[in-house]
Length: 452
Image (tube, rainbow, N blue to C red; front, side, top):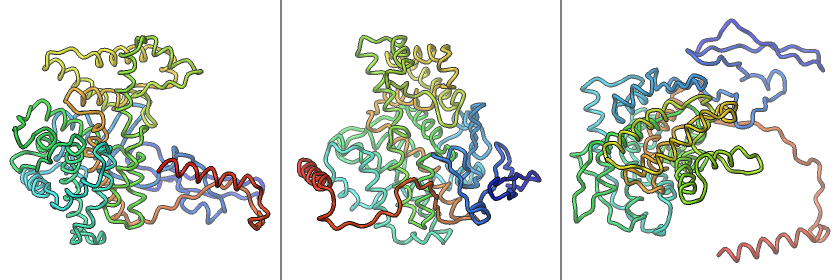
């Protein structure tokens, strides 16, 4: 990050004053205007709902060019990593800034493998959940509770403690997700086996049973590993920003990652691929064909959304979606079966890409459009789509958290606001207040009792 010679002038016509703001240039992408001292100098805040035009941090981890459809991890194109690398190799890259040497790679993989087992008492946590609890709900609770078991590495100001916690969380996330899956099914938990690599172990823990071994399908494993890579990091998205915000208070990393999982659960974030499957199932089970459905989406009177299309950042084809589309086609070719879901998805994509309505709005397939179809073909139920996203994104969260803690400009996150509420109201005694307030309280009480 370098200060550019370019400077910007803010003019206050009312006070007839001018304020100079420095321009800052990154290694690539849009330049930024440094407004860190704006309030002190002018008494003004900026107003940017959703932070669509605000750089909240300085990061060297991930870069996105939404106009050109480019995604880089530490400078490496996502397509190259997804097709040639492994998830743990990419994890090392995101965490340490460069791809590992052969010896570093082996040591890192062994470290993660040896941290995959959970404290046995953690299994009792799951028994406190209802059997029909969503796996994400269980993961939020269990990941947050890890800090109660690993007291030896909670000093986040100690680099060694940070690294130990990072390794533990990365290693244990597939185990926790698989346990949530098994509990949801009513099946016994399966322990991780050190003979397997990261992704094979996850598939083993999900699909093996005490009565029968699970034979790892290497194509399935390769695709699952690719899914983890494609979801590993994605700049300052909602869940990553949540992790950074939680971490800015110096909360322990287990609490921060639990907060990230909570944010990821939203259907506008990690739950979007499940929504795509629901959309395709609705088309498949109704009288609508893809063309009719596209027409319904374009009708502004309807509130029907084309799930899996469009992105806050990408204004062209999401490069992750291209990789997944190819992998989806390869999988069904290998399985020698036809997929009605894939046929519908490809027809929807073809119709939308040729339609001026979607072109004008720059709506193209994103990573969620094909990932749900792919996961379903691998035998993964829709309730596990977001937990799998969480496994992949864990290393991104950890890398961003670590980068933030080590940043010299690090400070607690404290956004400001534009207040538009009432002011200068005088307190009234309860007997002087309008009766509707009492009725509201009675209604709330009735609603609360009905929900017990």
